[in-house]
Image 1 (spheres, rainbow, N blue to C red):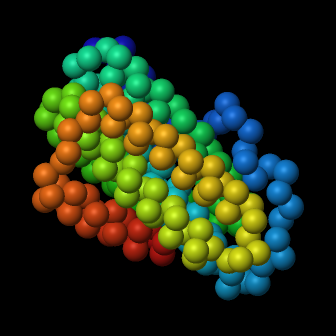
Image 2: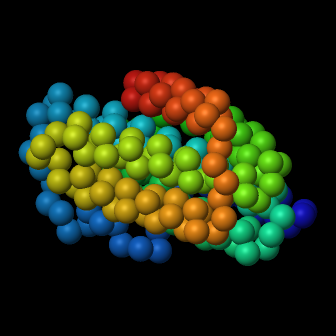
Length: 206
């Protein structure tokens, strides 16, 4: 448990210090940069900042859920998903730098809040823990699909990253469902949507 906490603290520091790394090649690496107008660039940066904050939250959620998982196989599944989410974090971090933008100033607050939510989810039991993953990934998939519609038409680099992220999120949700996830109460689902909406609005601007 002590080792897990030390590793978790290290992961939190790396997440918030924007030093995430990716074992996979950035899906936008070979996509040429687009000639965006200043307004398009600002809008794309706002959307990618939201996506970056979403990945900060994912690191906290998966870390807390893995800590509280009873079954070692489920813990390993959550840890593996967290590693892929860290790749998303690195991709969005790189795209923000290319757009000349910074991460959200309130990422530490979102990390702490998401970690607390992940602990609560984990304490409901493994099936509830997996159910939380399913619902989270469903909402993230919807969110990323909306960004595909909202990103500037010419921003092929951001679109390539968002599309790859969406594919991974769909796979994570399907894997959790196949592992025996239970359905969440409607109130929990509604609260999750409300929190996601608040994060989206604040991260876009701050």
